Image 1 (cartoon, rainbow, N blue to C red):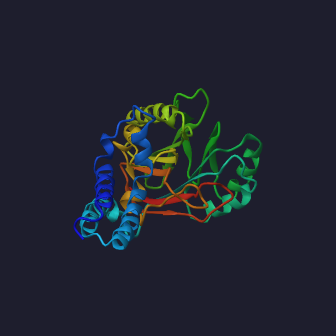
Image 2: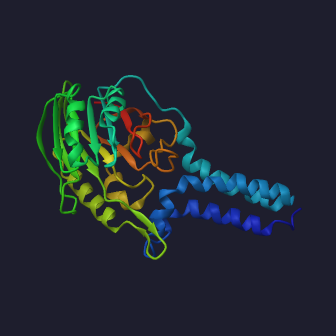
Image 3: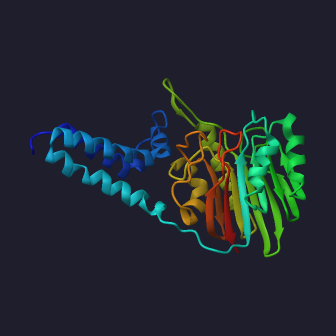
Length: 305
């Protein structure tokens, strides 16, 4: 029993090492580090697979070795499964990448508005469907502004609204001051460039990384103390490429959610690349909404000033 399953034991140790030292995996070759961090929670699936193999092999060595990756995964992610939702909150926000090919703007808006959000961000709005979104949103949200393919709708007055330069040459980010009954809050909306996995070049995320740095710089210079970031960042909170943002803001899902809250792809969510992040306010609750005609799930959160 102790001599069998050496290969399985080595695999278990390797999985544990990848999860433990993911930050040390270099990005110099195909952005392998960022790719690993994007799907890091899924490395836990290796544990039950290797467990079945170890039982079939009747290997005590492999069974003992499996304790290591199981312990590492639990240390990294078990806390996400404790329900951190708290009652109350002063502002409810929502964000949704509606997908340029979405042929049901009205139905999409109904789902998002049903969350009770006071402020809603939409990303990937196609120009010929903007009027439909404006009409559908106008029934609930009096104030709005659109910059390029991203837009912000609010029940409360918006001022100092402007495009945020994220080094793309066209508008995919904006900010606005929303005057809530409890005080002003700076709301940022962003849609980071898409990433791809290619055999020749690996994880192509260079433009996304540069845009994330530019957005982080803009947020760092925001004069208002209360800040909310809504959008499709095309990256997870584990991805080091988003450090310029994540180092100064909190994820509402990590602080006040229940579970991973995966948002993409909508049919079988594998990663949370849509984010609600905050600074200067306290997350109270975070959740995903029901599926729309988009390939992303909408998400919402309540925050307390």
